[in-house]
Length: 99
Image (cartoon, rainbow, N blue to C red; front, side, top):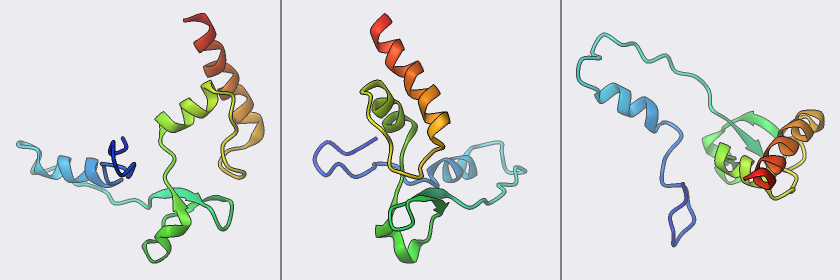
């Protein structure tokens, strides 16, 4: 969710993990770390996020992906297999016409 003025994401990709760590009653829950994938603009594909090169990355949220699909726009090259994008975008594009 973007900030209305800066357009920067309000939430860090790790916020869900941090909230779970603070949840009462979940003291025995083991949070298993995992690598975060994001769209690498330089490599034009999805790769694991690298904090040292954070300006090269774009986090494409589900909300943004659905908006692109509804508006008939294509995602950046390498974000998703073209055949998969075609199915997804047709679904969301048609869903706006029927509502």
